[in-house]
Length: 167
Image 1 (spheres, rainbow, N blue to C red):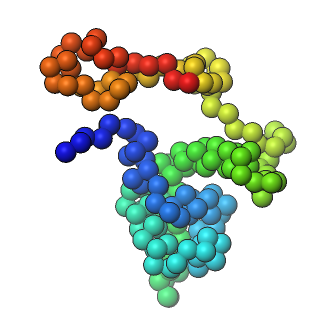
Image 2: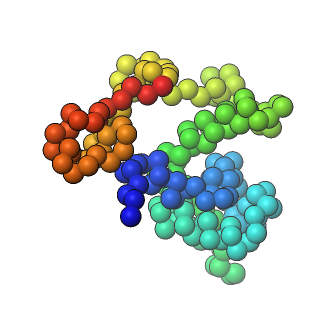
Image 3: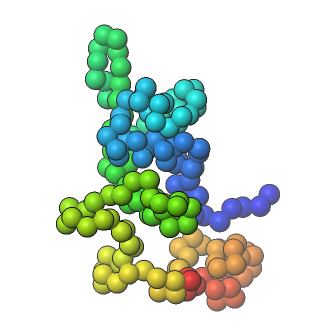
């Protein structure tokens, strides 16, 4: 059996990568937190949307909070982990605006008054992250740039690069 590369991107997609999950988060960030409004705005089948909401709650991305006792009804609010995904959604929106949309369907205004144009910067130096400006250092034993290293060469880590300049 082939082992997949240990990867935080794959782990993240296991939580938010199913169809409609990121659209649920879009709605929550727009302030739409109730099931019926999400169904209307996303266009997802009710059972699928309910499953996505359950998964996001189980993963700690959203919290289910009661807003009515009779009948018992809930809304969904982002947790700290959920709020951490807001920047990812802005970057996905920006990519779609640039490469797929004739015109952006929504424009976000930053607190400074300018249209929001998100960029990834290094938290240490403030430089914009560009292709070729970062190096991957593999932290999982036995893995390198080309993938999993054979057991005999994993001990001598230099036989296969364990870091790579990305870009």
